Amino acid sequence: MAKQVPFDVIVIGSGSAGFSAIEAAVSQGARVCLIEGEHLGGECPNDACVPSKALLKAASVYRTLGNVREFGIEASGRSFDWKKVQAYRQRVVATITGGVMGERYMQILKRLKVTWKKGEARFIDSHTLEVNNERLIARAVVIATGSQEVIPPIDGLRDIRFWGWKEALTASRQPKSMAIIGGGPVACEIATFYASFGTRVVILQSAPMVLAREDEEISGRAHKALEAIGVEVVVDAQVLSCVNGGMGAIGLKVRIQKQESIFAVETVVVAAGKRPRVMHLGLEHAGLANGTHLRTTPEQRTDQSHIFAAGDVDGGLMFTHTAHHEGWVAGHNAARVVLKKKGGLLKTDERVVPRATFIDPEVASVGMTQAQAIAKYGKVLVGRYEVQTLGRAVTDHVLGGLIKLIAHPKTRKLIGAHAICPHAGELIHEAALGIYLGATVDKMAGMIHAFPTYAEGLKAAASVTAVE
Image (tube, rainbow, N blue to C red; front, side, top):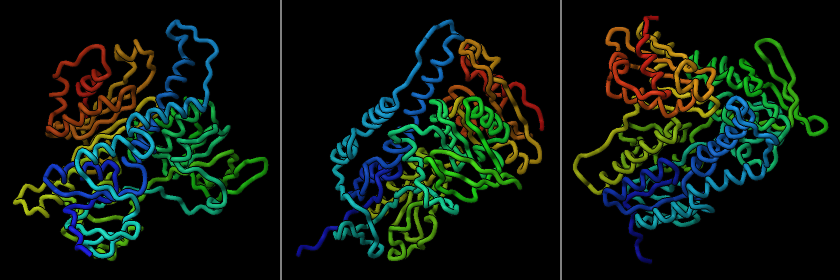
């Protein structure tokens, strides 16, 4: 039997981190193999970010139809077809991925001359991987297997037919009532979608506030925004047990602070967070600790110098955009190491990472919250602007929203920005660039902004900073 020629780089996983790693490694001249057992492209385009935003757009249109009289328009007979809404989601996903197994990504692999092995990878040793009883040899490996749902240890939860977030986004029927265990971005977006179409939704959040990573003021407004579309938001809620009740109902016993309550719903959705997907890899055979996540350096190297990891598996920020960034660094560095190219290794730079949650209105942030800044500096400069006073907000009949800026108390450099308003996910990038470049709030306040736009709110907030 002929001796197998090793691949320069084997990439495990074809999601945001994996595909970036592939493209980076190929750009350095590496011979690359991809191992992927599911749809090409990973969760974001197939199951998560893209389909959820498609559904949220449909929900937004439906909510708008319910308020058109404010604009002098009559639109009687508002209705929706659940199957057609889900068909829209499927069309959007197919447009991004090419459909079925991800034909668009297949074409990219073909163009890049990358070998694809379909299946689940497991390490035999630090340079050998087994896929469907075939052994592959790699000079370097990039692990980009993403994450999986956390299922909390709630008594009786596994005895009921609960939904994960994937089932919630692809449901063929609309439940009349729903309890969502969790209060992070995924939970809030699912709640927004279902409540918009009339499902009675209750969020059961164990933390003191929804969107707990956000600035406290923004989180409070998000809480009220969810309630405004009919979501019941319960914080400091510990779900004690679940039980199948009669007539298709599910009962949840919940401790809210010191009081116990029962919630009866048709469907339970678990959206309690994610954890790195690494347990199936046989990391111990590669000389890596088989723990909760893979420890990496700024070059995305693991404890084995020829094995790199990127995206959710390294236990850092679990965003599509940070996965892209880390994947490129990992693939680039893996290729340069095995091809013995001198220098030129990249390092991840995640000092400035904006994020957005697509409820109504959108929530977006970057940098420090006010509480984090005060904990570090003792006092900070804070600028706020109520969005509804902007000309654009008045024309759009927007009745609320906040843009909030955090600046260093001495240098006046921008160190945080937070918004809950229409298009928050877009305007936050101006603030992110300001933080990235070390701009002061005075520079932001002095720059001319187009009228009428929501971005004017950044200029206005920067103009009214005060020490807090």
